[in-house]
Amino acid sequence: MKRRAFSLAILTISLVAGSSPVFAEGSSVARMVFFNAKPGSKAPLEEAIKKHVAVRREETNQWRWLTWEYASGEVPRYCVATFGHAWAEFDHPPAGGQAELAVDAASMLAATPPVALYFEHLDEVSDFGTQTNTPTLVEISTFQLHYGKTGQFYAALREFHDALSRGGGVNRYEWFELRSGGDTPQFMLMVPRANWEALDTNADLFLNRLEKMLGKKKAAKLFEQFTSAVKGHQRSVVRLRPDLSLLPTRKGAEQ
Image (cartoon, rainbow, N blue to C red; front, side, top):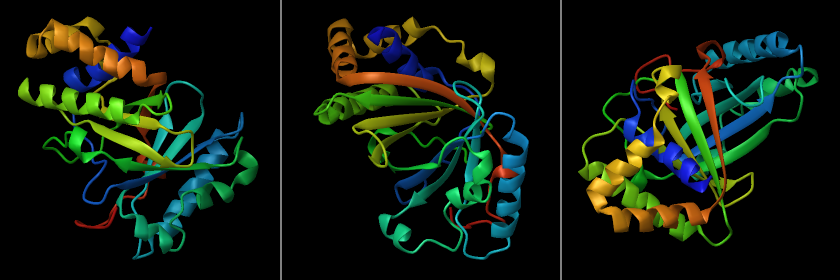
């Protein structure tokens, strides 16, 4: 089971195809708000969010929101995220800048209260790619670690990143570490997908590639270092909802 979780997660990095998203640029903190709609309330909840976004769009001091709808797992479920912030920015956010205000406007339609999580982007183990378009389909992998294993896990990520860099270019992938709002230690991997077909991958392909770059002995050791740190792994697919997102209206607008 651990072998499969490891292979599938890292394979999304090494074999991903398609466009690259804008996740983290500049400052490193992302605020992500997760919420579910009550059964039968999906349409009115989305309409309430659209109205809130329309009001926010008229304001000059705005943060960018990217809204994704979960396409696998528990549905209807959403994530509204704003990326690329310094911690100090959350001391004085713009009016209406918190995404959960949109959900509060339709609180009777949400199944549970919104959950706000703060993640820090891990520049050293991420690859930014060359394109800057926002993806329409994203694969998200979350890794819950055993307590005290953060250093071990992060060291493995650095070795993976270095090996992939030496093995040739790959498309964009982003690693984040949960800092506040949930169970820690926890890491998140976000990778763009061109389509659903791109999820159909052979997990052994990456392990073979890793062995060619590092040798069988070192690859096996690195594999064990990664998997022994992981307590649980969850894999989901989300799709962008531009109609529920607050995107910059001019070049250089703040995220």
